[in-house]
Each structure stands twice: as structure tokens, then as C-alpha cells.
Length: 191
Image (cartoon, rainbow, N blue to C red; front, side):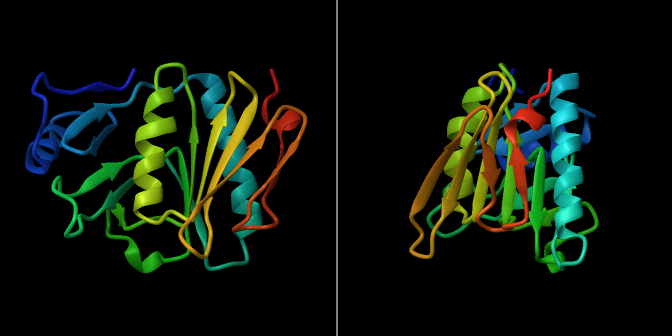
């Protein structure tokens, strides 16, 4: 379950960094709240590994690269944001901007993010992260739902409007950003 790491309602980014130094747990910081991610299930790992491999294959001759958790992504604050930076750990992300990496993190919005739902993180990925990713300009966001055997695809069009596709069981999901990245749900959601 994604629980706040402290009993306070809000934490500063500096408090988050201090907590992060004191634990090996995966922590995220969104809107003043520190979230601790649970250890993923074996099913989650299998889906993540499969998608990572497929993305790696599609991207191998391009300037884009796929990364998996626990690689931190830092969304830097803007003038309208009162809560400063936000740090998240996506299950998978693709970037075509290697210059945005520091030694330990990626700074800015990745081009493409995939989150794999677990019963305990559903609302975190479906609402909180969806809003964050769209606000900061992630071009494509897939929410993979193994429980319902579906993929929800959110993309930002050229006007900055969010487009939505739902790919159900026994259908094929195709990335709008990377057209050669196609996933058949019947293969992805093997039992």
C-alpha cells in the first residue's frame, strides 16, 4: 500500500531527501507527501521484464532508451507549483533525452511511462500519477492492469489535450509515440 512515510500531513522536499538517505525503501514525493512503494509481486516483475525487453528491442537502433524501477525521475517545480519538486519512481520509462540524466536520476518529463497496477497502488497510479504525468508533459502513459487484464493509454496530442484508449483482454495495444511497440494482452497477461 502506498502510505505516507510520516504522520505529518505535509513534508518539505528537504525532509523527503533526509528520509530517502535513511532507508533502502522506494520512496516517492508528490505534493508534499512522501509515499513508500510496496515490494512488487512476481506477476508485476514478469510483466515489467516482458515490457522492458519489448521496449529495448524496439528502441535499440534509436536515440531513445528504456529504464526500469528503481530509477528516480525528478519533476522540477515551476512558478505555479507551490510544493516544489516531485520525485517518482516509474515501473518503466523511456526517454529520448540522455542529457537529462545526472549520475543518479533523470530530471524532467520522460517521453513515455508505464506503471503496472497492484491492488495496493491502484489509486496512486490511476489518479495521482496520471494527473502529475499529464501536467508535466509526459507524452504517453500506459497503466497496465493485470487484475482486469487491460491497458489504459493516455497520450498528449499536439494541442496538449489528453487522449484515452482502453485496450481490453485479447486486444493489441500500440504506442502512438513508438509505433513499433505493440503488445498483445493475451501474451502480456499470461497466468
